[in-house]
Amino acid sequence: MNLDNAEKLSLQKIACKVRMGVITGTHSAKSGHPGGSLSIADILTYLYFKEMNIDPKDPKKADRDRFVLSKGHAAPALYSVLAQRGYFDVSELETLRHIGARLQGHPDMKHIPGVDMSSGSLGQGISAACGMALSSKHFNSGFRVYTMVGDGESEEGQVWEAAMFAAAKKLDNLVCFLDYNGLQIDGTVEEVNNPAPFDEKFRAFGWNVITINGHDFDEIEKALQSARETKDRPTAIIANTVKGKGVSYMENQVSWHGAAPNDEQAETALEELRAELSALEGKE
Image 1 (spheres, rainbow, N blue to C red):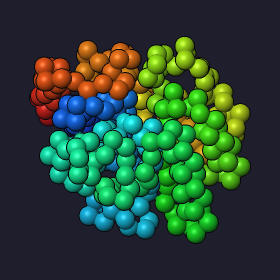
Image 2: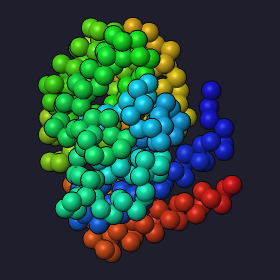
Image 3: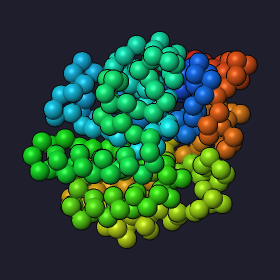
């Protein structure tokens, strides 16, 4: 079942605001990772505003669904969506990476409401997600677990150890999104150490595999519906995305993997995103 127009428009507006938060945060920090944060904004928006059983007023409730950002350097996107969802004020995004601030360069579960797992050491997040999913089954807790892995991150062997474990334990309450934007810090994924084909690898490990446009809310919804209906197997959703999505000069540019926009660049990006938001609001 597709989203109705009002639902889709609402999600598109939120995703645009999430992207604005990414630019605001990385610009204020004068460091960070905008490219791979912008590429996952739509998926995070869908998860936090449509899919997951969560409550910003009770961030630690026992039966909440969990999300683990395995590609922890994309923390600006996670913080931005958490702020939009009401876990803390949007203005706090301006404190990203500042001394004494709780919004660190990578997610910190001890101090940031809504963060379920500290992450950043590549490959480890998906393993933590497996442990959470196994715990949910063992204690019959009923919560589902979602994780986001990077395509470059998938060059880590630990990702595939986790994939093997998840299938062996029949973790059908686990969904792994793979952000396939094709770029990592040193160049294209294909040039650096190509881990593709992802779909064939996950299938070989025993996963249910779905390939989508990671910026299409209808496709995200259908994939997650398939994941909920799949039994005895975890689901991998290979999301084809654009690094830097939503900011014209950042799109498909590897240089924006780990560089912050300066004053002029940030204003240009925000102008573009404000124009997009205004256009979306005009459709109401």
